[in-house]
Image (cartoon, rainbow, N blue to C red; front, side, top):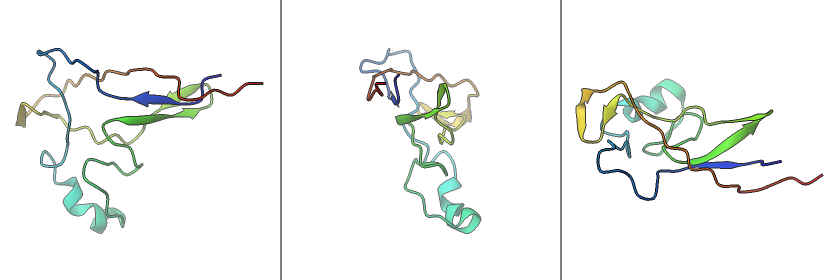
Length: 99
């Protein structure tokens, strides 16, 4: 049974793909994280500790990555709302459990 998956950007993104590589600067969330939630988060990390890439968590029979700090703004137009973001999931078997 696969126990961990990694979420990462594709190695060779298409030139037409509008990548979302950062969130700081597109939102003031990190200016108020300490006051609102009592934590001082690193840039581009959400409340659950997830970033824009990383390991997904096994939950029962599926994988999740909650709290990814994705904004509605693309890197190419950080002040123009664009509500349709694309996520590419590259699946790598990082560990297995053998019975």
